[in-house]
Structures are given as C-alpha cells and as structure tokens.
Length: 335
Image 1 (tube, rainbow, N blue to C red):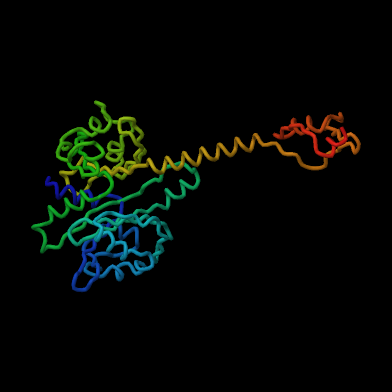
Image 2: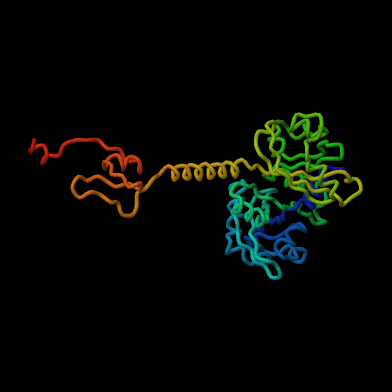
C-alpha cells in the first residue's frame, strides 16, 4: 500500500478531530478544505456542507475562542501552538472541554487538532496524579479531485507535521509508516524504522511489550489507550492504538499515537511532595490554646495531671518554644 494511502487511513482512523484550512489571499480569510469524521462528532458539525466556507462560518464561536488569530500566528511563525482547553457548547451535545492545537501543515494551510479532554480532566481532578485518558481521533484531510495528482505528497506532509509520534504498525509488529516525531523519539530517521519491529526498536525486547495496545486494539476491533512506562524509552507515554478497518489490505494494522506524559506526571509528583511536606509540618506543630492555670505569685503552671511545674518546662513540653535566660534592666538594678 502506498505511504500516502497509509497516511490517509491513519488520519481517518485516529480518534482526534482534525480540520484543515487554507488561506484565501483574495478574501484574506481561512476557508475549510478538509475535516475528518471525528471532528463532526466532536463539534456537532456537518463539515461536508461547509467545504470552502470561512472559518467563522464553520465555527461561529471561532472569534470568541481566538481560533482565527491563532491560525494566522501559526502560519506566520511556521510552528504549532496550543490554545489550551476550551469550553465547547453545541446544539444536541453535552457541554464538554476541548484541547485545541494549531499546526501548519502545507504551504498556506493550517490544521486544527481538537481533542476531547473532558474524561481525562475529571480523572486528573479526582486523582491529582493520573494521566489524562485520551479519547483522540486523528484523520487527515481529503483533497479535491482537482488535486489528486498532488495528494500523496500533501498527505505525507500533514502526517509528518503532527507534533505527536504516530506510526502505522502491521500484524507482525513491523513499522509500515512513521512520522518525524516518532523517528525523533527513536533517535533515527523515519526511513530507518520502516520494516523493523516496534518492540525491538522502542523496548529493546524480542517479544511484544506486555499488555501491548497494538495487540489489544486488534482483538477488540476498537481503539485502546494504555500508559507505557519503560526505562528503555526514558519517559512515560500515553499510547492510543486504533485498528485500520477501511480496506482488506489493512487487516492486522493499527495506528499508533503516543503522547509524552513527563510534564503532567512531574507536576503531579511536585503536588504530592508539597502535600506530604505540609502534612508532616502540620503534624509537628504543637499549639497551646484555652485557659492555662498559672500561679499569680510564683508563676508556676498547673498541668493536666494537676502538678505544678515551672513555666519554661511547661512550654517546652507543649510547644516548640525554647527559652534562653537573661536579666532585665529592672532586676539587674536590684542585684
């Protein structure tokens, strides 16, 4: 199967929503040229009826969320950018939160990657250290019939421009297609990975990784997400594998997408350390409160057992106060 067809199939099977807009220099606006099925389900759209329409018409809330401005900035800087999380409300859908990434892909084109982070956000708030569970779909844009002759190079450019490591893996665990981000993670060129077994390259093992999401998604016939922690990789990854079911020659293949969790886990560990330190500090603090019976003459204090003891000893046992003795000027004059 041609690399371009593999890349297109990867986009269509990926669980993240993707839209691609082209800058119309005459109108000075961004117009929709591609949207995968996942983005329609995610945003409550019918993108097929909006091809060629301006961004503000396809997404009426684009101005409110600053999407158009972010797209122009990504085109000018030629670099991906994250808009963070947006509250998304669409007719017929429950309100949910989306993480939006803008990335330049082809000349004069910019992609919008929509990721539903509602489940993972809830999990993170509940556990304070769990990695967000990604229910992501990714598909690549469809070219018009007038550009069929250029589609192979264009699909490959979009596939390689994705910021997350992405690969197509066959039933023998061999790489059939990898993007630049995955090759960078493996420390080699993309062409050097094609045909090699994924577990040998990424894990340094002769057998597949225990709980391999590639195997699991093929058995389930549906996307599977797993957290992979392996010293050979050197960082925690949230891996989503989705089976390619569109064509017979893709049987046994899956799209493999990885997300680096290092920053999220580091922040979670810092929060846990801070909480533990505060709890330890609180446990060490002893406070005195209420009424303390003290002799009006000798200043001794009656403790809870009914015995009278020196003021200094009482405070040292019931607080973290230490005394140092000296003589005030008035008493010094009496000596």
